[in-house]
Amino acid sequence: MDIINNIITSVNNVMYGYLLLIVFLVVSIFFTFRLRAIQISHSIHALKLLLSTHEKGDGVSGFASFCISTASRVGTGNITGVMAAVSAGGPGALFWMWLMAILGGSLAFTESTLAQLYKEKDSQGKFIGGASFYIKSKLKKPILAGVFAVCMIFTYTTFNGMQANTISGALSKYNISVTITAVVLTVITGLILFSKRRDTITHACVFIVPVMAIPYILIGLYIFVANLPSVPSVFQTIFVQAFKPSAFFGGAIGTTISNGLKRGLFSNEAGMGGAPHAAAAAHSSHPCKQGLIQMFSVFTDTILICSISGFILLLSPEAMKAIKDMEGINLFQYAMESHLGSFGSYFITVCILFFSYSSILGNFFYIKTGAFALKDSIVSYIIVGVMTVIMVFAGSLADFKTIWGAGDMFMGFMALLNIIVIVILNKPVYLLTKHYVSKLKYHKDPVFNKNSIEELSNDDAVTQWNENIQ
Image (cartoon, rainbow, N blue to C red; front, side, top):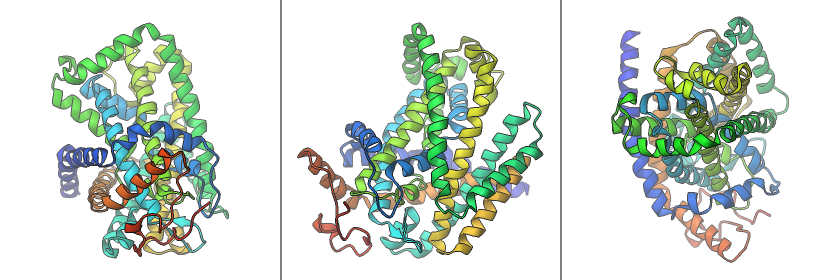
């Protein structure tokens, strides 16, 4: 077992220390220029799409797909990850997290647009797609698609165990037995996953995401306004220490940058290949619409949620003084208590419950889509459903570090494979973006079909865009 642990640790150190970070930066900069910074120039338009009346058809609504991907993205990493980044790299790490989100928006747009373009229909007549599908249908690499699907199933199943472990750990502070937590979580998860209605997961995400995000944002804004006189100095500290970190936090610019970039990457999952499976499930009149909505999910995760966590910490002098003695959720609870008293600690515990459980449901959406990429059948669903329920129960009771490390490793493989694939398939995204922007330029609602773009009209992998979707 020690040998396996050492191998996993060594692979993860290389992958997450250098390789994946460099690949992500290079490719995200490439797509930012290739698509003329669409993640910046069309960010307001993306918000309008999210809030607009959603098109009806054989898939979920755009808002529902946003909630599914946001449920998966927004987890305890938005709290503990930010605490770790600031503790190790100083306040300047927040700046690099923001940069990672802005650049990563181009990858989120690209992978989700591809997922929409190459989506298919499952055995129940619903849209399905994602990285597993465009690797198989467009690149004609079914074995590689199968490898990606297996990596995704394993990754998100283990991550669900991690989320369950976080929930049981948070509740144990209030003398709630981990066994009771394990049983309750397992029963609730089983009821949702094996409900007679296959869209129960979608409805649960649509309900939980606003319920968890809105109160957290409002409390964060309250703390921000209550400490308004200190806000300018906090911004100054962030930008100054982004390039000239204090010796108190290690004093190395490389430490600040790497911590900010890594936490930003792991938090928003842009380019990782999971979120496109939610994007493909949506009904849309143009592939780019889902690309823009999923791009906005990245901004919601990092620019909004992670920033709120960061400012709650940085606006607490007491917590900043204790930053070397405390870590993770304990540090954040201390910061909240300094702002709001005992209510702050209770509030964060409730947030952890929602953040973590929403991730379990959002992750399972990816898991079952990966299973259907291998074999579209009720048996596939039952197998991954049972796997998830078992992992939620086991994860609530114990911290399986070897399994978690293996999950990180497989997620790294997922990300590297997906990023390479979207670079290979960059031309269809460029053509679709050009078509979409040109329609907007003349104040038209962009509508796409296979014959809208000559270069895509003979693409046999495009099967769901033969007619205008009104």
